[in-house]
Length: 637
Ligand code: WT7
Image (cartoon, rainbow, N blue to C red; front, side, top):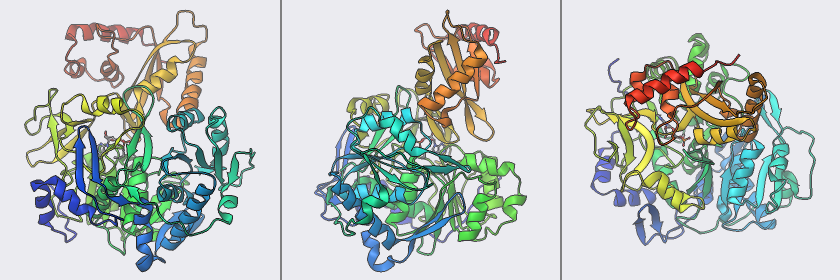
């Protein structure tokens, strides 16, 4: 298929030119699109690897997403909410503004102050963005935890952030079932005395056991005053913490600021989605992940856009749910994941073809590499060959998009499977092991060569880890952990993670986190987790387990126990597809498990494919470990 060019009529060559000459003044110009209480003295304070944007400037995220729209679009719908069970709600900008102020005052009334952290564990209901914006309004830092995480996982996150208030719901719907979120919170906080209050939204009307710490949302805001002046916060005031998995230990708290982050979001939302007042935007991401923070909450609301927010699973009650929503609300912009698209594609063309999708004008993809054939299906069957597709590459750490086609800015040829070009004002390269720029069409590591406004401030409470994880592999470059190549047209092709981070259905899972969960089982001596390609989910998890000498449990029982343990300690998203019991794991001379080798074996790849990846290990050594592992694998009964 040749390159595809779809023009939305935008061709602003100046923006890119501005950006190439001086990225700092370029971003300074973009920041002026926001409302500041007072301007900055310095655009960028770059004290590597710590960046502060718009130093001295005062701003508020809630003010920029709500107050500024009140004069001209207070009755414009902000959120068209669609419940999994068919319920719906419409919240205008004024509704949101009022509710946010009421909650903000209510939070103050229970002692929440600027700088405090609040953990939010809610399903996809309007109270979730309302809670985030109420925190932002008073300068509390929100830490949203995806509502699919287990009690142990949420406990770790509340403990690490030392949140004194938790906002949750009685329950949430998922595929027709009710998940009792409040019970999970009760379990998570039972030893955390610093948690002073739990605010509970009644969503499913599940019977509740309330303790003295618990307050019902409705009771709390009932008499709360609906005027709360937004705090004037420093530009780098911490807006939120979002925990994400890395290569070592427990999830790390990625910390984002305010002014730089909002500048990045305002600009990318406009350029990527070509947002117009008449658009109805729909991003399918859960707010528990960064896509939801940036492109469900902050991006669209900064622009006063109307969006659909959907509560449940994309294929519930059946695989036509998304098409039905697009038809019902006349969605114009649709942003989803390759995993969802692969799943939809499996159900054939008749299903989407039986709905009226003619309102669509722009399509997006996010979270994992999109296969060219899936891209083409999306283009043809969903977009009817008239909508540009943006394949947006970014990370929790980058805050917003870093590579994407930008139909709101310029018309460029699209190539199915390529993210296309970096966002203006962001310098990205593909380099080798020592940081030398690679020639075109050569696979290497994707690095970012300058600070950008949406860049994380640090890792919560751990500046050293921030340095080690992102800024130690290369001296002056941010290390993304991704493989990529750049073609002769300067287009980027993302080629998956270069580290031990997995992407299962687009969710980020650390192998180290899984392994430490598994070895905490009393019968397990060692374990190794890896991902193997999967037609729908992109990747699925395979786990190798070595039992202790004196282990007594049979492997069938053990397998069940390990799955329960993983679900309890992390959450259902980390459930392995297969557990193999082996007698030993292949290791390097220095004792490091050769994970890529395990991956090759599980995927039936040839040994030749992996030998090049493990530079420091002799091919013969890999070969013998490979044979030995093959012999020792007893596939589960
Ligand atoms: C990792 C970041 C993007 C925000 C949501 C995920 C992978 C993300 C793409 C894409 C290929 C992609 C990368 C990245 N990734 N978008 N368009 N093409 N890979 O954020 O959970 O922090 O994951 O997702 O591997 O490093 P995240």
